[in-house]
Picture 1 (cartoon, rainbow, N blue to C red):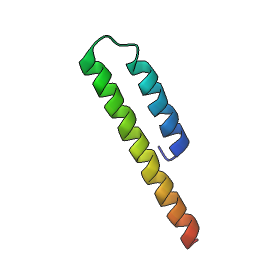
Picture 2 (cartoon, one colour; picture 1 turned 180 degrees about the vertical axis):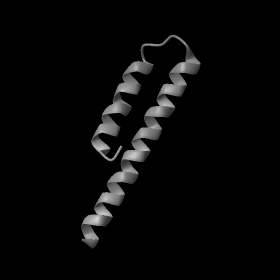
Picture 3 (cartoon, rainbow, N blue to C red; picture 1 turned 90 degrees about the vertical axis):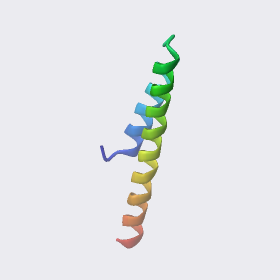
Length: 55
C-alpha cells in the first residue's frame, strides 16, 4: 500500500476494533497491528518527502 493516509485509517479501524474484544491477547494484537501500520505510514511519508526534495 502506497497511501499513508489509508494506512492511518486502517490503524484507526484496528484500534476501534480492538476495543470491541473481550480477549486481552486479541486486543493487544490489534493494537500492535495499529502501531505497525502507523509506523509504515510514517516511513512512506518520509520516503515521499525525500522524493519531493530531490525531484
